Image 1 (cartoon, one colour):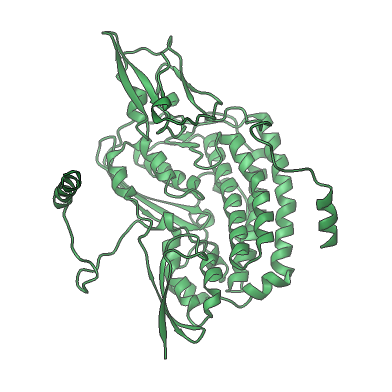
Image 2 (image 1 turned 90 degrees about the vertical axis):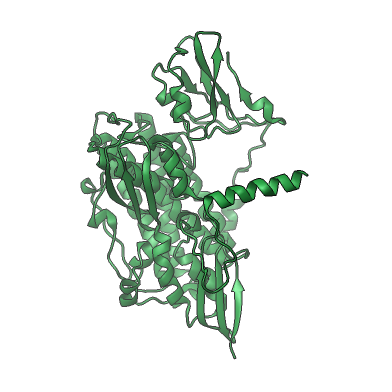
Length: 112
Length: 392
């Protein structure tokens, strides 16, 4: 018991004083989905929305050119299937994970 | 005179909801009965209205602790129906995550077992070491729980070279710590007094009542799906199947601690022998009609998925048989004749996961406990009337 107590007297504090100190997230953490407008073809009828397991993507019409995805972040599970299903590679998951809001409507992420 | 008391579904000693009806004579348990179904979520029904890709994520959420096993079993089954061959590197990465998940699950169990007997220091220590595994899983897959590494046809993310160095470093730390837990399990008096001779299940009874997983291996039954019916990259790895002759709860603790050591060795072998190549084969969306039974070794035992397809991109039927369900008759047997104070630890010895297990609710219309059975249409009508009444 005493060797344990001795060891623990000199250990560093394990608590991280969040939000004043931030933890380093690993590279390729699955965070908020980001849409690249240039790559989205508007014409594919929503491959991302079809495969989303949480029905977190709704396709919104853009004039007569087609439709683009709008992400519902309160339903998103950050699985990354949308970025795999997109035939043009227009969706990438960023490392942003601090997405909490007070209002559900602020979590509708329309990035165009 | 015997008294019958209910334990659960809400109880501070049980981690998951289950209803035990215990018939007592003083402090000794004479008979015990169990009622399941509190965690039933309708996953099997929900899987029929989602396509196969969405179903990977649905099966993953059957259980948070053994999520890799569920996705592996499901993807394996669909790959068999498609006749698809997964490239070798994909199989190795899949197995790496299966083993990391097993280490994580056994460390979690050790903590929960310590908590059930009141030994909270063991709980805190083993969960602190579990953070090492969680960080490794996060580095490889991007998330700590519900890691979604499996896709139909392989895995989704690759293991880079600096990831390999980090994994090897994490595994050496884990090996040292798991040796420490083995010492605790075999020599620490507090632990031994609560777990030695408690919840005995002899070998013949374990075979007769179809126990699976580390719980059966602690009674000397040498059954491990990784050796008897190898899947993923297990044919290329060499490892031992750990059994113990103790037939009690201490046996399960020792088997799990030794399995952590074996899993660390397997992870090391996988990292060193990782072949080059593709990680995923292209899978068509529509699956030809057929049916398949897919088996893997989840951390708790043998997990079975049955999938029936009908030519579209949605399964016709998915049935999941979780290992905890197979262990229930054995644990009820081992509780009879014991003391009531041993119920939490003996129940925790099977590593219960009610979330995995509750795929079925039993309705007893003959004996009057069930009041009314409604069809889908009647339920819909009832709902509409109820909401209309409430508004008005």
